Length: 311
Length: 108
Image 1 (tube, one colour):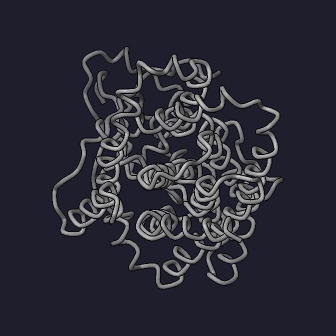
Image 2: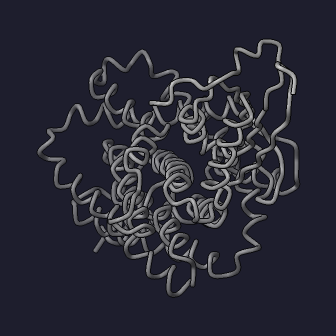
């Protein structure tokens, strides 16, 4: 049976494709994304409080490395097979090397509804994977020697809404610990699924806009937007398995590697690589990869994770 | 030109550029500005402000013609090529000309 939150996404998508006037007010969308990001951060932070840092260090390094490697693998593919300009290739590679918190939230909810446990500190991986790809993308587009204003880029990356809220949630959860967070449970954890459903409805509406611009960019982007997440999922899943994560944790790693950013990276790329066409990368990450991952990808990656753990 | 005539520059652009544009304004000595969220359609498609990546802003800045022209020239040279940006200028009468004269400290 399909998770009802995914139905909310399809509902939003359909409404958007039919050009309905439906949309969440901008302030409401801001509010629900703030609650989602904080909730994800808090959950991870509580778990971090239970784990000694030395045990996490190998995982942290491996995840960071993954964030650097993925865009480096994708760049030549886009540049030479896809015939995109250097800036566009770098920008799309950065989008796909980074993560989508929305996809992550759907995966968490999917695993929970199938009663599959996963390492609760995975939100830390979301933060870790978000950043390296942006840096690699900028260097790929600009080269190391150029006059990139790194101060501005750092401000955009670390103080962008997404990272800031995730890190803030992680720190608060870590500092407060499980008991300290209990009074906040009704808002952040009990309402999580309902808020995620609203968020996904809005994502459906936003995706519908991207579907329109997709038609302009031809079949390469379509194929790229589906095959690359599957290949990245294999890389991420194998890494998770090698790190000794559970089936659930391996699935999450696969999902994180497979997902493509549509909030943090577009904002950073717009500032640092302005000649890259933003509609191109958004059409791919939001128009193709996001729906693919939440409709087909997540269950698929879970089945792969079960296979690899069954060997 | 009467004493209370000043130039109004209106900038319609991507909200991603907000900080950059504001820095430009103060570096050219503008004493103030007004920003509003905006929606619209242009050569770069519909910018409906549905979410961050498609949000637009409208910045209005008042001052003496020379300064306004400098700002417009700078924005045009740096951002026209790669960003959604519209600039237009008009002469306006202001009630307190001293408020919109000269330039504030340019050492920032």
